[in-house]
Each structure stands twice: as C-alpha cells, then as structure tokens.
Length: 326
Image 1 (cartoon, helix red, strand yellow):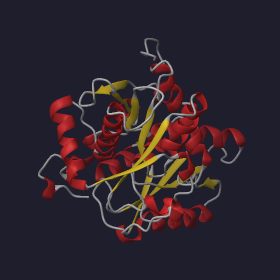
Image 2 (image 1 turned 45 degrees about the vertical axis):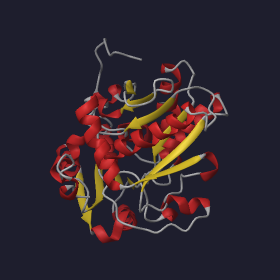
Image 3 (image 1 turned 45 degrees about the horizontal axis):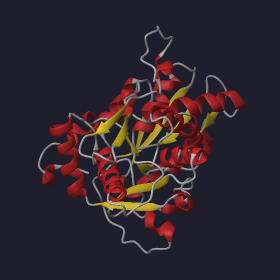
Image 4 (image 1 turned 135 degrees about the horizontal axis):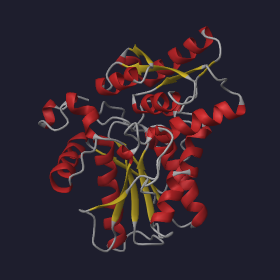
C-alpha cells in the first residue's frame, strides 16, 4: 500500500489506498480487518465514487466540462463529489434530507457546492425526485444517482476490492459491509468472488431497515439512528443483488451505539455508527468461522469503516444513548 512519499498534484490523487487495520476485539484465530476510509481527502469512503464517477462521466461525455453534478445524498457522497469537482471543472449541487448531519452539509458548502434541503419525512425518495427536477431546469446537468448507477459498484470493484486482496495476499475469507446504496459491498464482493468464489459475503443494516424484503421476508419498517446504511424503500436500492449475499445481519441502535463508544475508548477508532454496525457484524461472522459454524476459504474477515465520528458530534454520538439524535 502506498505511503505517499512522493509529491502529488491534487487531492484527487490521494483517494484510495487507505489503511487496513485489525479490529482488536476480533477472534485471535480469525482476525477482522477494517479499511479506514476517513483517510481519504474528504474523510469518507464516498470520495472513491465521487472521483471515479465524475471522471467516468467526463470521459464518456455524459457530463461536459463546466457542467453541474446534482446528487441526492445524506452528505458523504456530496463531499466526495464536491471534493473531486474542485479539480475537474464541475459545479456541484446536492439535495439533502433535513435530518442528516449538519457537519456534512457545512463541508459541502465549504467545497463550493450548493445544498438544498428536503423534508425529513420525504426520505431519500423525496431528495431523488427533487434532484431530477433541478437537473431538468439546468443546462449541462446530470444526476449520477448513486443508488442505481453501476459506476458506484464499479468504483469499488476497481479500487476497494483490489486493495483488500493485495493487502491480505489474496487470503480473504469474508467481506462484510453495511448497505445504503449497496455499491461498496457489491463492488468488493464482485471483485473478491472473482478471485475466490467461496468468499463469504455479508450485508449489514440497522433494525427498522427493509433490506430483508429482498429475501422474500416481510420486515417491519421502523426508524433508526444509524446513518449511511439501511433503506426505507427497497425499490430505490437498484444496485443490491441478493443473489450475491450469503448473510444479512441487522443490529439495534443501542448495541451499535455501545460499539461506537467501545471502538473509541478501547481501540482509538473515532468512527461513526455505520462502522460500529460493520464491526459488530464482522466480529459475529469471525466468531462463527472460528467456532466452525461457518465455512470460509480463509480465516480472515474484511469490513469498512466508512467515515469519522467527528461528522456526527453535534448529534451526540458519544453522549448517553437517549441523547444520541438520529
């Protein structure tokens, strides 16, 4: 993995090649490793798709230089697109449901983007509709639509998956990741399964999310505080392929909150709620492999810590559970 010992031309050149670090609470015989995506220039895993998708759209003419990218986003994708846009002669505009992190929205604006809020009760579906309305009103504007654009998956197939494979010398037993758009898990799984078809693939969601509907279940929809993963409307999650997934694990907000605090206090990991859910899931998969209850080609589990808890301090992530605002 690169240590960036040579000078680089722009922040876009620093996207990817993030550290892969042991989750210390994982079993001795089946270690869990997490990609620390806060090391990206915009401090989240979404920098990967921001750079990759914008460059691809400029290359194929979907977006012309000087045009506008409009994306419905909870925040990190906006920061990723906005960071890349500063270097690619692209304007950025983002539609964000009101309930999401103020820190993220402030950072998008700092990067020169315009942020438009939609009502919380309209969810991401409302943000998606508004983004497409805006694109119709502007010339040379495009909605990349991370929820259905295959470039989202391709970005992780081309970058995150290969980085993990190389770092572990190909010895990957399972890949575990929370699903919002599901691009991260789908891209990593596709690449790693091409290297070894027996790699276990596990998806993660908060309780109250509806991903289990993809597996023929009738889940009870509910509110959850975890940000960045989960879905209230599976119809919008077009990238998710249930045939790729061996396991779907769901976690209650309270245990996610406890794990978020544990990761900070015990492991020095200042990560947010999606990372805590991923940690819980990856450790559960590792425990089952260690106990002989789950077959995997190698005794390793890989996950991602998508961003930093600093983006959510205003929501009380490190205060008592009752004070944590979703």
